Image (cartoon, rainbow, N blue to C red; front, side, top):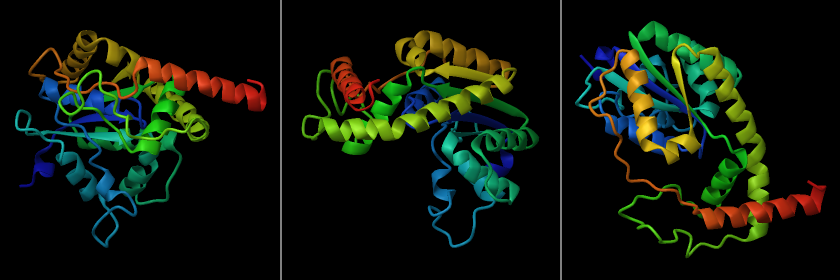
Length: 262
């Protein structure tokens, strides 16, 4: 029997790019008992699947099964980016893609019918400009995460990268509408499913590991999961330090004021 066939529980993390989802998912994994939610769906998205055939529900389940950990062999786990939801929903439904809000609810309905227990966590970022800055800088430098061992505190991960202010400002402007739209979709989804969803804000996640760990553990236990630890272990830090972030923000404000008077 395959791992996918024996799964009876699902940890589902729903987020958007550069919202802190890697940090959240590593926290969940380090707490134990909830699997390892990562972007396991990437390989089955249209255009990414290595096989010539179109992805099926079996492929979705196999992707979720990649998140199984030895301490919870029947718990699958996956991270779903909101912009991928229509594609995953279309695979499950066997129909054309629909909008992200409907797709998210369709996926949750499917999961509810397939799994006995669901640990549903939604992540948003209160400051859309910070998220747009993060997307812009990551896209321009191709640097996405900082591991403590690889880049010690005080080091500058961008020391050998050029970040021309004009290019940064245009990239922020390109990213900001999508950030606003996706965060609103995520908040609406969390409100609609408030009885079963834990809504986490990045700013609290980053600042309060103890408090966030307690919320994650409490939510998981109420959903029938069994986290092994009460405190997450972390080895990631912010890429953009406070000083650089404020410089980028200030420059973007001047850029917008000069061009459209905002």
